Image (cartoon, rainbow, N blue to C red; front, side, top):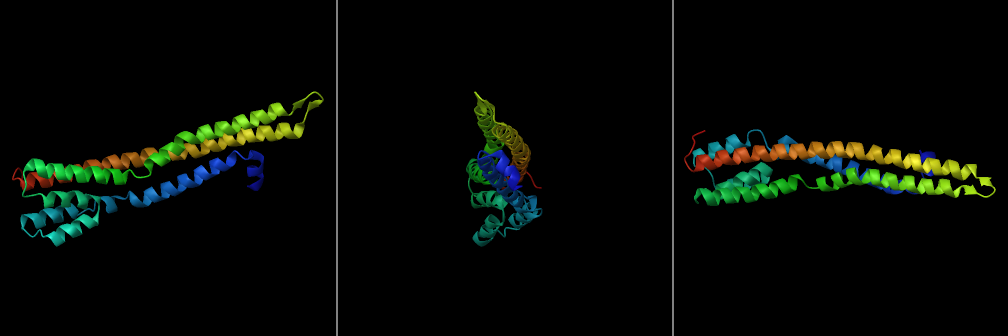
Length: 202
């Protein structure tokens, strides 16, 4: 491994740093973006049952809010259930925007790495090409410098692509999960909103 890094030259180190950051972001988002953590399976049913039985208290709303992002959205609606439909909807939408922002945390960084890694690899390729041209001299070509320049060019190109592909795949995957969670939270919030204002019974 050390021989590969040595052959790839100094441009490989920014790529290594980018790969470490990408792995850390992927692991963090995999831990956070779990359905059981974002949208607990029975939370909506429990909240609706408490609401129908008029058992909603400030303490219960606080526990609901702390339970999950969906809980924060539902708690915002419950705090404004005596207000007009418009006010309650605005409170839910505001909480939903904040929840969506939190769910998308760090994804821009992962997308940036997916975009930048090939460019960083290309930069290493340019550095390698400069070394290749530098191996030319009036007395002939220096094989050692030529071989090192080729190694720098190829290794950095390969590493750039190797980092970019999984980063892009996970970026798209996590974006899709966030959008799916947002839609589910919207549906749950609309159900609570309609029940609070007598427009549906279940």
